[in-house]
Amino acid sequence: MVRQTLIVGLGNPGPEYRDTRHNVGFRVLEAVARDRKTTFESGGELYREAVGQGPDGRVTLLAPLTYMNRSGRAVSAWMEGQDDLAPCGPEGEAEGVPVRILVVCDDLNLPLGSVRLRARGGSGGQNGLADILEVLGTEEVCRLRLGIAPRDGEVEPADWADFVLKPFMAPERDIVEEMIAHAASACTDWLEHGTEHAASRFNRRGITELDDPEPGAV
Image 1 (cartoon, rainbow, N blue to C red):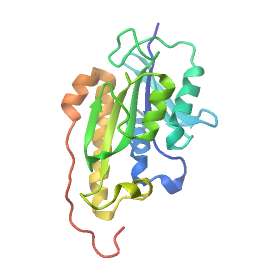
Image 2: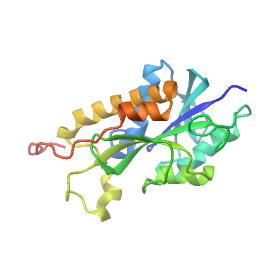
Image 3: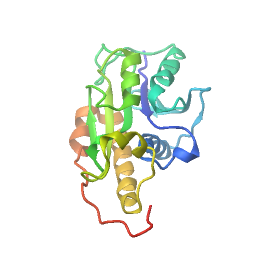
Image 4: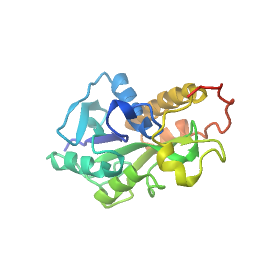
């Protein structure tokens, strides 16, 4: 049976959220789609998808439309619509969830510019990833986390929910664009060579200090 691969980029739908910190997962997914020359189409009310071919069969890029905290609903709906899934875990072994999955998301615990790929683990407080893990009933799900953390002391934990919904500051944007391109390349390497290979090539620690923004820069 031909194996399927699913890459899920997390974010919030709507143009008002596109350039926010919480939406870097969406932007990586869009970059992967451009690189693979595929386009997104509606999959119904819960997600958009772009479908192509990879080295192991069909590859679906999935952008949930459920808002971040309910991302698992979109993944569940997509899986329910498939009838040819081959059971496999993060590295292709015959166990775990019935499709090879990579979740791409932001992470407030990592410095800005960080990229970290892992084969399994908890959510690390990322609500969209947590919802997907809960729906799938396993932590054996690959995840590619992108660092969006501010400089030390810039934002109090109580303000993080608002912080992730704000756009990046002007001095951060070049770093973010490079991080997105780096993460998109990591996704391609993961598709072709697996988690261990991609992690060894693309995992990195980000930038923790930036020049102070000019007055009025946002």
